[in-house]
Amino acid sequence: MIKHFLNIIFIFIFTFAFSQNTDEKLAMYYFNEEDCEKAIPYFEKIYDNNPSELIFKRYLSCLNELNQEKEAIKLIEKQIDFHPYNLDYQVALGNEYEKQSNQKKADKTFQDLIENLPSNPRTIIDLQKSFSALGKHQLALQTLEKGDQLLNGNYPLNAQFAEVYGALNQDEKMIASYIDLLDYNPRMISSLKILIPRMIDFQEEDNSRFKMFQTALIKKIQKNPNETIYSELLVWALIQKGNFPAALVQVKALDKRLANDGKEVYKLGNQAIQNKEYSTARSAFQYIINLDGNTPYRYMAEQLLLNTRFKELTTFRNYSDQQVNETIKEYQEALARMPKNGKSLPIIREMAYIMAYFGDQPDSAIIVLEEALKYPKYNEEEEAKVKILIADILVLQDNVWDASLYYMQVEKQFKFEPIGQEAKFKNARIFYYDGDFLFAQSQLNVLKEATTRLIANDAMNLSILITDNLGIDSNFVSMAQFAKADLLLEQHKYEQAFMLYDSITDIFPDHKLKDDILMRKSSAYQFKGEWKKAIELLEQITTEHGDDILADDALFQIGQIYDNHLFNHEKAGEYYFKLMRDYPGSLFVTEARKAYRKIN
Image 1 (spheres, one colour):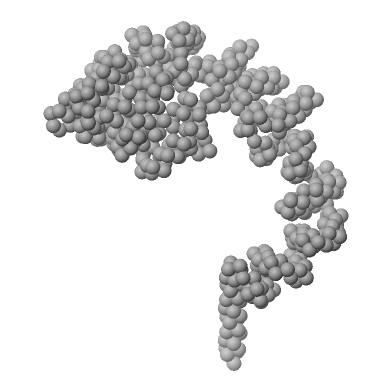
Image 2: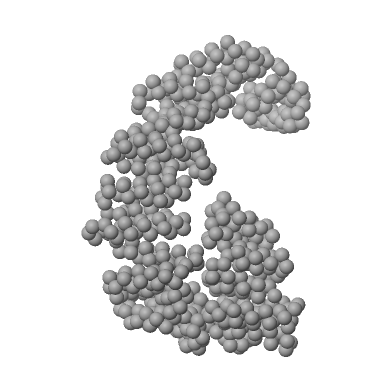
């Protein structure tokens, strides 16, 4: 008997649930078909058992569509009964009265909500957000003003006030509300750094809100000279704006009011380097070096000051002989103050690179590097980097087989490490330059699986170049000339290299090496800082050899030039996007995507 009774209950529940589910599907179907007349009967059936926000909103929308005003009011009142603590529905009731031109009832509903506010921050903020969502910003402001009285300063509503003032275009009050949040709790600076960019567009050049913000902060700093938090916020804002020189002025003043040890200036200097604001970075590090006494940041500031010089030369590549000589002198003076041990190897390498590649002093560079190898052992990988640089300079001097010995030493010592793979690749190129293409290719094929993506990609490209251009006699002749031209290019003998490249295209007008020659010439112009010529040649690859292996590489290089050397990030983004769109399988896609996301 009991079992029979339970079966009846189960059948009833199942039938009811099935019916409810069917009615809901029909309600949604007719609603999506914009047939409210047929949808409403089904909403009526399902609403009491499922007064969810979705059902409520769609039901109300249909009632409004058919001008069923009384039913709409009843529905909202019913929804309030179901969800008495959800203020959105109570605001919706006032909004419905307003829609029905019953302003008196609408005003009473809204004012009752404000007048009966509890001294609960969550409820106050919820009501403000409900009004703001409907564009009722004056009512949102009234809510916050009433809430502020109730809370009596025990909970800050500054962020909410700022949001509403912003919507009302009361910019000065918005900014003051944000800044005053720090009076309540200085640790709120982290939250402000998230909130402020929503109201101030730091990328906009002539931004009135930013100017107001800057002026308000300066006034705060002048009124409260011992409160450093306002200076910290101003420095952050100036960095967001990209005004590093102005940020440095503020951070120096901040440093003097704090420990005067250069910590904040050091941090700004590093940020300036990351943003390629090298002049500001140098000024920052020089400030630290000039501080009285041995600050904990002095040694690193000296290193970074030199490294900034190095990056300026290698990034802009727009320099005079005098600038190069002054830079080398700065390195020499700094090294004279440093102990002769492995810690100075990175600085020595930078100086030697500048001497060899920018100062036309390869012999002196090698002497400096060989002397550095005699220093007490510090780090084997750092020493290996010195050996690779010696080998690179020997190639520059046409001592390729002496260079090969250094490359082999590093390869043997770091067989499975990235630095060993770099040495192996460079040594394979020695044999390639000498015309021993088969041995070079055997080494390159191993490197296709290198852990470093850049080495693997370079090895694959050179291996494919050899494969594509070896075979018949004419190809072998052109390949040998091409390899010799590559060596001349590596030695910065650009005119001789270009003559050899041009001789290949003169003799073999339709040769497959055409795009490779364009790429090689572009790399020469890039080293010389002649960016326009470099881009023109890379563009030629993309238009005339779009189906060849170097087309994606050319797009990536153009993006890099605009991004890292010409600082036209919008243009760089165009080329990164084109690479991702047209060559989705390219090895450069991952790096292009990272760079594109950084820009956008």
